Image (tube, rainbow, N blue to C red; front, side, top):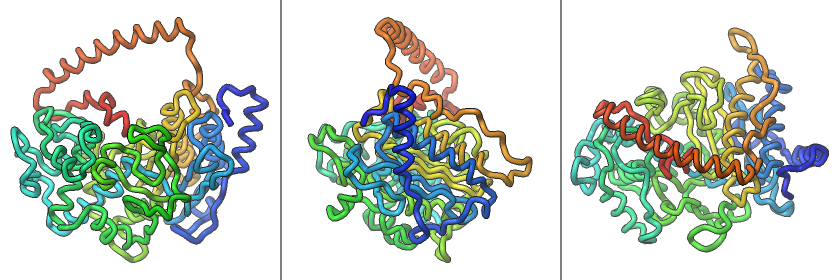
Length: 469
């Protein structure tokens, strides 16, 4: 059913239907479940999460969602909403059972964590040149590119390249990644790069002698009991997996294969995308990070390494991770030390050590979204989810934060409004003018910043950046 632009009475009915599809989960898999008041939170305030998710579904942003909010070692919200597809006959979403393509969360849950493990083992040095571990990564100024620069997206590599257009041979795709010329001087600019994450994944493989998926399974996921987190899921799991695009370039609807075309060209195992997981598995991972690298008596990485990799290192970026600056779905209220990441398919994870809290959202918003602007929907829902979690805390030193009259999802600004032809024409003209101004400003930024390494003028403009955020 299409919920966009419904009369208020019908919208209320649609929301009521969506509410009936919210599925609380009992304890069992993943973190223990706790009542909100036992961890200093208000159940009444947390109920805003139901409304936010349901409005995103009702507006056509995504057919279903899995949400886990954890605090002080327990899950206080652990719910599934809606279905895996738009059909009412498809399986209901549950945090324990529903598997999602987590897209760029692969960069942190997978690749960055693997680098952290090898760093702890003394096998990787952050300021070592990449060529020490990958001699094929050479030519031009590549000898100046370090592991640290890859982790902070300041290597000089471009955002990406259309590997899938020229090859579907994983070995050839890898060669193309390594041979990609730098677009900028190393350390000069911030440019969110899938290619940089891919190179990091290859470093893991070169240093460990294992394929990236095997290394992560052995050193991270199996140790944590994350048995539903993997690359290239088995065909036997198809019914549990949320589908993604229905008309992708590869020519058939995608379900159980990585959504990202370049990751698919690399064989489904890549540093920038390819992991599948459940919300319950990711909750275990987030708790491990909050615990300083341990979970259930098992240490994955050193506490000092968690601290090093999750604090700001260059601009708003930590090492591999992003930080909560009020953008990209982090909301307004997470602390200065909060860190996280988002994924193009409609996923996000934010971890806040100061509040001893994490917030996980999994959706498949790329699956035939019915909203006119699904990116606006998922962006607002992500931010509202983080805000609602923090606003539910009743044990802040200064007391609870006042609840807003409305959340972003209540306003639905830009979700489904269709501009008139005259408005579209004016917007197009204004956009073209702004585009030329932006290019001029970007060139000016290059000249003014020189090689200081502080410019972030490319952020959000590249295809890769758009896919991330």
